[in-house]
Image 1 (cartoon, rainbow, N blue to C red):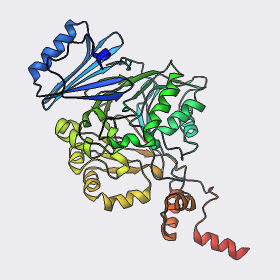
Image 2: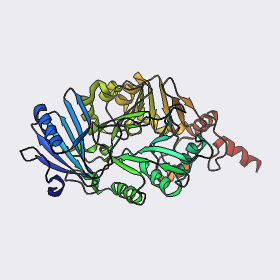
Image 3: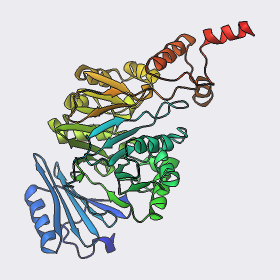
Image 4: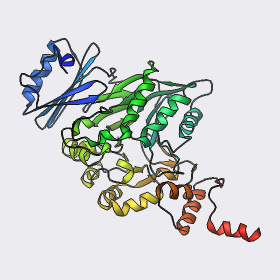
Length: 441
């Protein structure tokens, strides 16, 4: 800590708390801070040779991002608490990224393969110049999804050109969000250019009270870091609350990170999610990742009406995520659930208040196991692509212990075929069809 903050114009008072933010970044928390002191502190950094690269001023909140050499300092004041982060890791970002307009800006909720598991999440955006921005990836049990992501991008890239990924955002380091990303880096990069990775993963060894640090999931961040260390051509940006950045015609604001949750005791790794609001072509799209109770309770009073969006990625697949109060503020026209139909149905009962609030506002709802859906921006409505994958009921029962009724299997398979799915899954035959074959034999 001493070396990182040496020579910086810190507040005269000692910090109340210190928090390791991961990637060598450290946060100092000061209580009882006021806006005048924030302005004086910012002026002190400017006088010390820092350049202010970003700022945010809104009721109750002031944020500033400053940079000198390879060091970024994030100042974030909210409810008289100042979070001062010294970050020697992050690359600088662009506040605007002008580019030619050759394609329609489009967002897709990509169908991850739910054959063996109900979770997993991947969103793909095509920017106005034909490059892509990707959000998360999928679970290690979605075995071939890195190849499916690559094929999706390749089919939408002109022949003779490499697939260009302008940015890849990882919301948090849970396996169902990052595993296919590092498989993509390992196996699919020969024909691709990846410019920048955006994320904010916590330290592998957290402070006391963050019980999630004992989970093996936290080590996925280390795996990603080691892979990216071997690919120095890929820029890496650690995001902090209040920060803006642009990727082509997409504009982003960081609404929450694990740094905001500290010092609340956090035993839920989902509360290490980085939450992004994206704006493009007059459309607002909110990426909640797996944000849960603690982050939801922070964002509701802090951002209020600024949470209003047109398209909502529902937090944590629709179960144990954000609150009804949060969704009353988002009031999204389109709600996107990264989930299976069976768990969506269950969560309508288990997470009744939150999900009913989402449905009260939404005029269209889509579930990722039912096939990829896409919308050109500005958003009017989503269009469905043919459904590609189907559940392996026997494997799901062996792996996770839950079972579907024969009637429900029949319904789901009929709906899959109606969505354009192909009748080519050898692991599943509807019970009535199976009995007919047995009669023939």
